[in-house]
Image 1 (cartoon, rainbow, N blue to C red):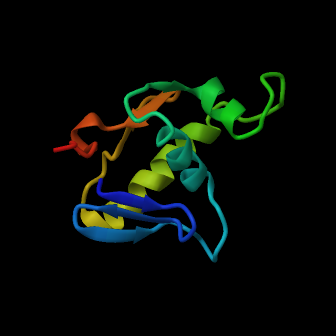
Image 2: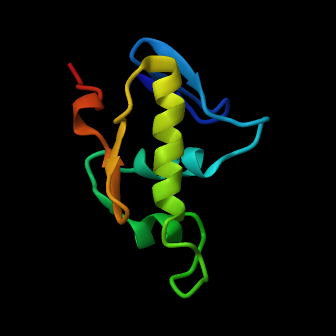
Length: 105
């Protein structure tokens, strides 16, 4: 990816701009991306992501909340770029696909 504008919620990736906001509101996909961007080389576990979003471990939160955020985010990115695996992961662990991390020259 080239850049992410946190204010506008726009991801620059594959030489395209992907607007992630839905009707000007943050989505779980945006929250997931902003969490993963805090440490792009890390694999985040489901409970770490939810904690970063402000949930407590004992909160009644769907265990698939982050997984569905990943699916939605990848679908939004695919619509614009044709790439459907920007976020790697399973139902319990997530990270930005390392092949798309910007290499510093």
